[in-house]
Length: 495
Picture 1 (cartoon, rainbow, N blue to C red):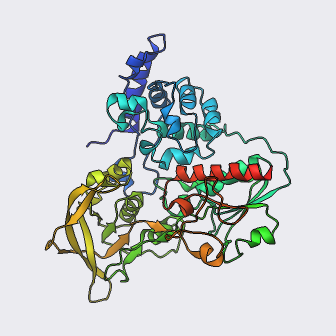
Picture 2 (spheres, helix red, strand yellow):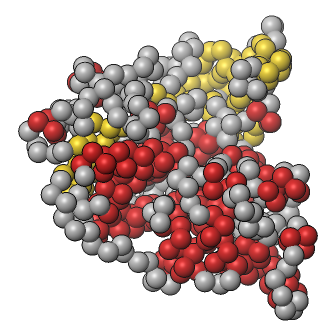
Picture 3 (tube, rainbow, N blue to C red):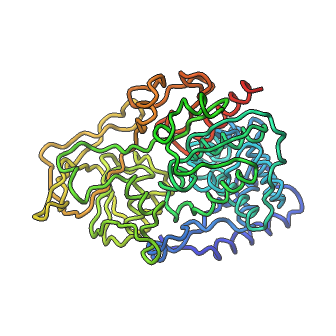
């Protein structure tokens, strides 16, 4: 597929928008069905695979207005029901269509203080865009109003034009709340609590705020400057951050209540403990968890060899095990770090890949090779004791499992050896057991997820939890929804 430049897409959108405006009236619902879905402008794949700059370039004004004009403004607003934080989607989209971008930003920020982030990394096709009436009328979620792209446009324009508004300074409530973890759940909870006038202190184990958004998601998909600016907004609102502070080791969890004078605690520590496949040879030099690989590259900037001394394993042929967004991130990062060939091994087919279709498409455009219906059984060592190859087993798809995806069935006798010098395991994460081990009263399930009630309250009075530490590895917006729900419960108790 040939690459279409940002300028070409903008030119086509402007011509179509001018034709609509020439009507001199609002388009009818039937006419809106015929408006062109606006593709996201992206860097040329041949250029971007050698750079860390953001791949998606964002809509220009004509594209954004044309895409917003596709919205049917349904009375039942199914898109809002699909949004975990309940953004008034028709409300902000209508403002974009009218060219009132400042008001569009205000509408979004009533319920979502991280629109520039959510517009980039949230799986809108499985959430707000999935129930879109327009998409259903046209036969597919890819034909729905591109809500995430519009959200990103509004946030980026607000920032570029210097129009970002800080909420009014709240009146001091006299209460103090501790937030453990500065990922999407923690930041959202902190913002909502601070708006109510509570003193909020965020404790972060790393040297930077943002959680998985900083250490897990690559720069080419989510620029770290955006996360810094979002944290800065909270600081300007009065939230304070304590970095390099590991609750459970630097300070026991319950001590925040008993000794430090906090009235409530929210735990949003994420799911940062990587899973492995438990196959022979997985402990060889040259095998990495995607967590470690991406943390070295993202948080510790191993890609920037002129300014960072972070060591990164030199790779020529890389195998990435898994089919989710983290697998796509790791594979695309490996290319940018100099690998000559990168393969993704996944034991199901293309339709069953759990990663976003957009991320799969970007990986394919950049040259990542997909070895579908295959999975390793052993990691093999060379004479130097390092990774030299994988023994790989082929699969075929059987009947659908409980999740609705077709189950993989191993093909006996199909084992074959494929040479690789690096293996990156990206099959998911589990909860870090530190808090559960140091806080015996904290109830967790067999996977280490903190157990909470419908208000996000844990088994310990005045301690709440949300995000991946409760859900397992989920999405940014789902974590934000849990942070918001916990904040509402804490506010209710404190008031």
